[in-house]
Image 1 (cartoon, rainbow, N blue to C red):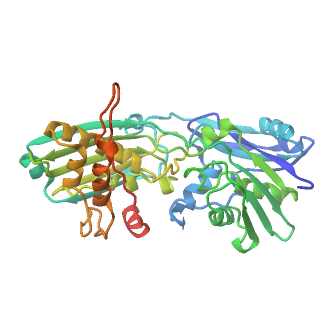
Image 2: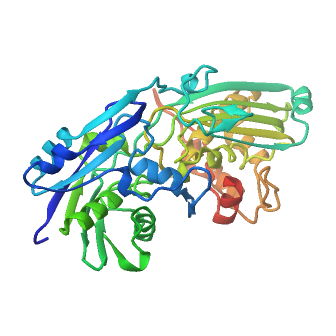
Image 3: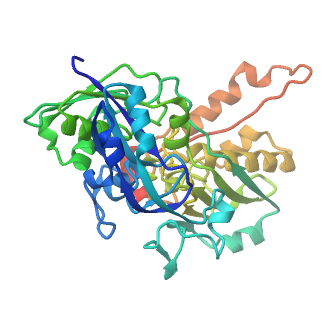
Length: 425
């Protein structure tokens, strides 16, 4: 755009550090610099009161867009600069002096939940004391212990998954213009422009009615572009400078400071009678995700552990443990592939132990119309049985296997919106 300038972000080099002070005077004095913003410029949402925007809580979003009390992961934004060139903006970032008190940190789930683990959020309490366990949810149907006593075969396995980034080709990018009367136009690569408009309004204080969010062609997202990172910063820089501001993340910034799917640790135990009837199923699920998890809230996936099965008794437990990693985000049905991976592996082992066709085992225990899920709703017609029957009848399922060939079976499930919202709450 005519008069456009460039924005750059200064990011914390530390996984965990208290921010005691920020001096931007040298950056502001650099020729070519037009504006500098820090957490002081972002609307503050105090931690003692939830401010929900859809499924995102602005308390955590304002602290994810720009570090406030503490930097919580390497790459956490602490300041942003707009200048007449990218090079000048990058130089100005180097001139900003941040007084850090470097704190102990944890990266892995096991480290984050140790009794002596460094606490990310001192205000977060679990079982009456400060903790990194940010949430717990349990659903139960029947006497699970009795069910396992009645089982002829019990398979129990533990699984670990790593955080995996969506890997979209296009990095996060935006171009934003703010007129003197606050009329704001946002061009950005996003999976939801109404979300961009609403979140930017909340975080900058500009009314939604003054913001136009225009969708640009998107070079991939897969769930990872459902929140804002640059847009509020570029908006504030444009407002301060009176010039349109363009910001583009480098690939390193994308990988360090935007949301992959969460890593997890899970244990699944399933017991069945000799005829394949599942009499008990139990799953526990630990997910690495800070309070800004939002759509990637692992409870959504954890509740699906046995949604497609209809065990006589079941128990599902989910906990979220935040290590010093960037905020997690959706990656195609957030939490569901992680939960399905563990359950489907155990089902395959169970089918093998029973000398039973893996599709037949799933068909025998399939949820169907009228099944009441452990997490609440009674299913309408969901098509799961029909899918299994079609797969079992397909010629490919019976075709002879060649050398070094195998055949895999797995099922997946995702909520319709009302059930998903009930489960998340």
